[in-house]
Each structure stands twice: as structure tokens, then as C-alpha cells.
Image (cartoon, rainbow, N blue to C red; front, side):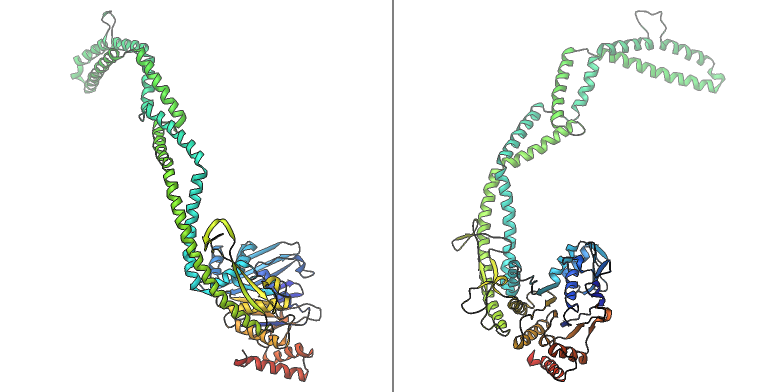
Length: 577
């Protein structure tokens, strides 16, 4: 992790590693900025006051090594990030104006995404910052993972039944609460379908009737025009003196036929006149037939107009964008299907009601099975954590689980009680602490002092290691308020936790730092800043000097060095770990 212009840190690189890393340094050296930097990288609140004086912005960059199947990697890629050889690069900037920007895998992202990723990446514990397991929902989830298949298997079946019950209940509620609306919709559909059925429309009928109405409305004019045209082509019997087109055409044909054998071109023209004659005769005959067939029937015209009015009303009510009878018929088909669905709702309501009753009964059985498995796991948990606390100078402390249910008349019935339920079952889960005999067990957030809370959280994390799969734990002065044997035991517990996860501890106790696999020290320069070389990994000899300083306040004290070497030797002895 690289930190620039944050607090007293000018430009420093923090090299974290697997296992247990201890971060030490004199008061005010900038150890807290290491914790703050990790918080910023994982979505913590950006405070512009943290930007170093004289700089426009603070920048924190980190490289996360993630397994290929990590859900964090999958979520980051989903957000557009790119992995760098299996690692995820993240960064956060904070300006003096208060603006904050986040980047994941080279892609700008909302700061909220960093917080989302941080939920699965790191568990942070400090004197005022015991974040994770203080939330009852996380306590329930951690207990479920601790219980393993005993809870996971029935809980998976419970969630499936819960999903089905929600679907059935939602549909049933919609059907019952919308009964009036459905009845009104059914009545409107019946009226419309009856209206369409009474009219018996045929697709395209309106177009045909429009053409017929046009013809009947102008029958006299059409008949007169056809008669005049026929007379012009074939002659008028009432006035044989008037030359018609047929007579004139016959004269032209005779004139050409007399001389056509003298010129081929003229012969071709004569043939074309013959063709015109045939066509003219056909047209004249058709005109005579059209005039004879045309019937100016006012009764038929009135009937056509009445029918067109009926169809126009259907088009106005049920037609679509194209205003066609085909759309009216399509509406009628869809409306009939919807009416059948609405008419069948009463029967469907009865079926859904029976399904809901059966699912609620099945859900209650599974919820009881999940609760019993949680109760069994909670007993084992309480014993394990209480045993850990006995080694952390809290020999009389007792940790228990409060697993309860909330009465709810709309819930499910379990052992004669009707209780509230949700996707995780019916249990309200909370960790309780009785710090000494006679004390009333209280939620750990309220029942422990700062120092006790740190030790409780450490004990819980050790017990949950492996069951609550967070890859990194950060403890900020988890050892505050303790010393002596308790401090040694805290170091031992942290080393035990580091066997299955990455553990980073900011500490002022040499007994704790001695158990670290890697020891980082934060040092200020003469001008009061921390530069690139100010956060360094200590060698074995340098660790002895730092532990001596922490023990005696003097780096080169012979007694302090001897005590530091003794601490390191004891911490490295397998039986002490």
C-alpha cells in the first residue's frame, strides 16, 4: 500500500504480508494513518482535514492479491475493473475541498463499491470502531457459517420455500385487493365483446362498403357517362347520322387495306388498326353491360350507410393505429382470453389460498429446524469464546447467544406461537456478554468496556476463524488497557488467527508485537513527516531494538534488549504459540 500526503505521511510504502504483521512506532509517528489508509481504500469516510498541509490532495493506492474464484474479484470485474496478473489495484484520492474519487482496476467507480468490496475483504476492530460483529445480522450470519451444514442445508430449503411463499402471497394479495377493479374490467370486456359479436364484422368489409356507397351515391352520373361513352364508340340508334368512333375506325381500316400490299410499314399500321378495332368493340360492349347492370337503389344505399356507421363505431372504440377491422377482431380475440382469465380468478384465489397455507406450514417446520441447529451451534460457540476470554485476563466472563423470536399475528406458527419470519428464518440473534459473575448478560456493544470489547472481539474472531471467511483482520490498539500476561495471550491469539488469515495489528505492547511474523515501524523525520523510508520492515536485530524501546523507552538498554530477546524467543517457541 502506498500513502501520499495523508496526515503526517509525506510519501510512504507499507509492505504487508501473509500472516501476522505488527505496526509500531512512537506516539504521533503516524501509525493511525496506516489504519486510516486501509479504511479509505475500503470505502471509509473521506475527511479533507486528513490531507497534509501544503498539499492539494491525499492519495492511497493498494494492491490486493485475490484468488481466482474470489467473489470480490468477480464483483470488481462486473463493475468494469481489470485484474493485473490476478491482483486488483485500488486507489482513493481525497482533496482539500472534500471531493473524493475511487478507482478499482483502472476504472473510476462510486466510493460505495469500495465499501461493498471491503465487507468481504477486511474486518476492522479498534477502540471506537468495532464494526462488524457488533451488528446482529453479521452475528447471525457468522453463527450460521460456524454451524456449517447443520444450518446451511435446512436454511437453503427454507429460503426456497420462503421465495415460493412470497410469490404466492403477492399474487393472492393482488387478486383479492383488486377484486373491484377486476369486476369492472370484466364488465367492460363483456360489453365490448357483445357489441363486436352483434355486429359480426369481417376483415376488409369496411373498405368494400365504402366503395359500394361511393358507387351507389353517384349511380345516375355513372350511368349517363357510360351511355354517352358507348354512343361515341358504337353509335347512337336514336341519331344514326352522327358518326361514331367505330364507323370512323372502319373507314380508316378500309383506306389502308386498299394499298397495304405496296408498303410493309403501312401494312403494319393497318394491322394495328385492326387490333384497335377489336379493343374498341370490347370496351363498347363492356360499357353497355355496365350501364345495364348499374342500379340506382336508394334502399341499398341506406343499408350500406347504416352498416358503415356500425363498423365506424367499432373502429372508434376498438380499432388500433391502422383503424382497420382486422385490429377490431384482434382486440376481440385478446379480450375473450382476458375475460376467461378474469372469470377464472375466483377459482384461482381458492387454489392460491390452499398453496399459501401449505407453504406456511412447510416454512414453519424448516424454520424450527434452523432454529434448533442454531441453538446447538450457539452453545458450542459460547463455550469456545468463554474459554478464549479466560486466557485473555477475563476468567469470569461468559459469552452467550440470545436467540429469540418476535410475535407477529401475520407470521408463521411455531410451537404454539405466531412469530415474524424473513429470508433468514424466524430468529433474532445477538451475542451477549456477562463480564463477571452476577452481571446480567447484555449485548457486547453495551456490556463491555473498551479494553474488554477488544478482547471479546479478538476471542470471537479466533473462534470464527475459518467459519467467517474474511481474508484480512485489522486490529487498531486491540491491546489498549491490558498488559502483563493478558498482553502475551493477546499476542498468542493474534498469531493463532494469523494461521488462517492475514492479520495487521497496530500496537504499543511489545508482548503483542513479539508474536508478529513481520514487524513494521513508523518513524518520523526531523521535520515531523513520514517519508518513503519512514515505514520500514525490521530485521531481527532491528526488532530487538524496537521492542527494547517499547519496553524500556531506551533502544540500547541492556536490560531492555535482554527482555526483548526473551520475548521474541518465547513467541517463536511452538508451545507458546
